[in-house]
Image (cartoon, rainbow, N blue to C red):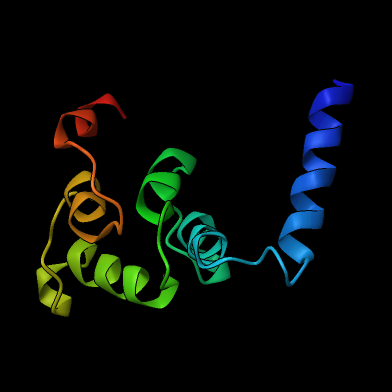
Length: 100
């Protein structure tokens, strides 16, 4: 329990520090945040997969919004796994998409 508390404290310190506020963290914060808080509300796993390795959070998130968006709203209507695979900045094999 103490380890979890220490990890949470470290995460808070890293997120609030401008030195460590990397593009990947900015991307994760929006991807994981609840829809009522201006985010996409996707799972931690998908948010990490989408945002890891990005050097441009805005670009990744705009791509994801378009890819995951409903076609009636000018989106592509892709599943969440397909949208993550399409928009993530780092390249990984696609076979892991079905593990979520």
